[in-house]
Length: 249
Length: 259
Image 1 (cartoon, each protein chain N blue to C red):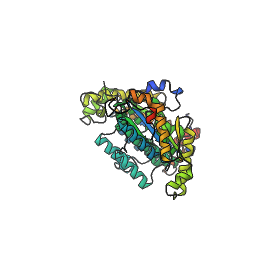
Image 2 (cartoon, rainbow over the protein chains, first blue to last red):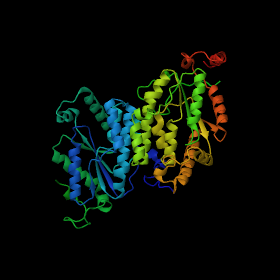
Image 3 (cartoon, helix red, strand yellow):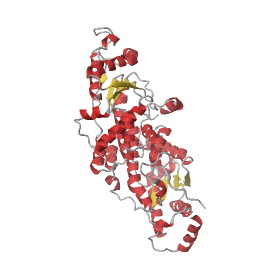
Image 4 (spheres, rainbow over the protein chains, first blue to last red):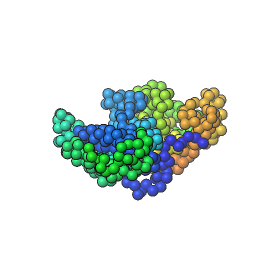
């Protein structure tokens, strides 16, 4: 038989797809995926970095880094931008290609290995960005329907003016317009995609404390029982896994 | 006589495109690898031009390099590091670029576009590689519905003898060797092309392919395609600048019944 087991079988999933508005694949592997979303200047990267450090300190095998694009995809993106040859359709497709490469090359193998993958932006970034740039909402979602559904999605919400002031305030009119439309898209999908909303105007430490509490509430059990650890279970101070008490900065 | 429907996308309208304003004619030739598509397309082009139709110029050897994703795809093929979903989306990017920047402008100008690589090739490849049908159909939904799709259908055995007698060796990608469908290129070619044919067969009904028996001699296939294409409701605009050719009166009469 050919080796076609590298990705989950889709058909099984689609058989009850109507019940699932997210239309991404459920994650049946040991590893888990935590995603942070938000517009530019929301502070999401700071929050996911702090979370990844903390989870690593708890003894979990955390994968959090910027994965490079494959050279052929990267060069195509650069050429398209330099030549101004992207349309909303080709822009969405090349971004989806880039994402698929990360999914197939990094995220899926890591999740299968049992890692706790933390991602700064995921398919939802494309849902917001590509629609803001003129692509069809359902079509963009269909481009990502093979992706693994995150176990937890954090959405760092900040008013547009706050985000722009953090970006040194000099966003040109069209970038501002794109950020504004992206924000509308994020807000519109928050309930559908089961985002856990974080108030990004709070002090960084307060946001992080709430995020850790959310992780413990939502994932405490699977973290204890499923996810790969970098150190043997029980060897840490404070016993195995996180307790709510640990969820304090 | 066939009534002419305005061009439209399958499920996802291309942003900013008024598809009904496209006056040209889109004709697609499909089939498995080594079935003889390019030979037929070259002959059909000559014939259509002699008939006085204005065609989108044939792909120059360098065309794929000048497109948005052509060079990247070549690199990806030679390095073979990208996964199958990634490759499908990369091919779809390349196709979308060609559709929006080459095919649509030609159709807008009223030309006849005759192509042997359309979205169905990408879909069939994805199906042969075990990807989900609903997914690939949604992804490909931006493609324009052609006025006609002719499917050159053959059995794997016919393809094998064509490869042996023609090129004399099995191509790495046409054999699906990146996914190792078999122990060697021959075995892999047979299994992969069989799945590709199954994929095309499954698209034939839903996407309105006209199936042509490609096990016939090449000139018989050509005559059959000629017969089908002659019956298509071309618009007059694609011939506006061409000199009158033999039989122009008959064609004018045919057009009168179409329009």
